[in-house]
Image (cartoon, rainbow, N blue to C red; front, side, top):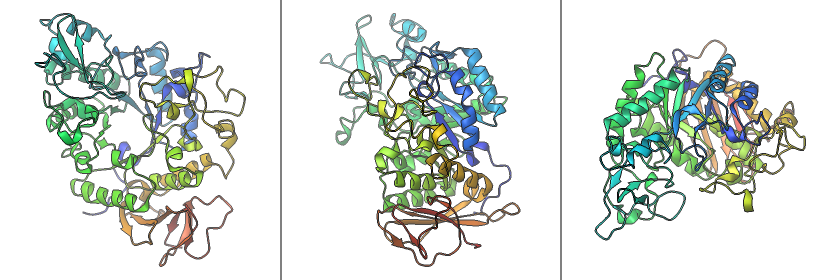
Length: 520
């Protein structure tokens, strides 16, 4: 297959996406919770950072049992965050700033307070009864299958006394599952996408997308019992749903990008969600998200991506942190590793997603006692963004969660302009990625390297004038210096601070990453 050029590259294929968790981004009205007006006021930070798109976690109407992922109106904004006018202005502001807008789409379930579910649970004969998954009790009166819910050790079924049947909820009981086998469900949810696409939204990140094709009434294989049903492989039905979804959304006046949270741990299954270019545009590489800081593991991740995506003209999607897992600064353990991880993420072949605060080097907050609010134990990674080094870190009131450690010192204002800071490190990497298209759309080849080092080159057959035809990346995953033979070229980026000279010869320092231009 010939190497790609930079012409006619879709935005989702060549860009970098930044995730905003609205509750923790920026508060405009002093209630301690981030909102849409606050988010709009801080989009300049993303423009200066150098990303191409912004993904907003849910801000729809919700009782907030799962902090917005339990939706009771998909086509309205929860008053906590603002209103539809604020959403429209946020989209307009983002577009004026050169940013595409991606919204969360939660197709697998609603809130139990959604009017649809109110009708569905009212009687077995209600026209919307089959919009949700209802089943009779097992012979012993218990749940219909042995599926387990997320967020706790309890069944994924709840008995509703009104009709004497169980309803399915892969997450909280307050999140009943929709049944996409019913054609009216698919039609209604596609109408949701059309509603937001008509308001200018450029793409949708689809929450636990594989759950729209569940194989119902099947017990869990013995070796997988106890694992939450939301992460189990539910079979091929999802691909029929996604093919239909893609066909319908491709017919919109402005077809949106479809980005799947494909929470499966089989790499081949992740690629399956792309279909033959007729399902998702991007599917999150969840195995990489959970990979440790280990060169051999990451070499295997990259090699698998080459083997799996290239033959189908697919495009990987990489992420190191998000609102559901501990931040990679916390998982990897040191600032040096977090700096090297930024190089690794932003020089991969594929679309990188950044999570708000990783560009500041934030670790997880310590959340204890009555400050704990999330049913899934994810409060630490959702701590508010520190904007300045004032006592409130730029928040007009005490925020809903405590700040991460060293928040004032790691604030945007304190780091901005400091060449040694993590923020300026990310800005340099993103500028390099934009300046050198080889990093955004080029091919990749893994090169030989000593144990503990990952070495690869990115290249383009037809780079634009003045751009590099190839660059080489080296990442030392160890806490010891390593000599790397056979390397030459000019250092153009990496973890060394401006003014610092990379280590002697071709050696890499502990947890050091370098980007080299072999032209010298």
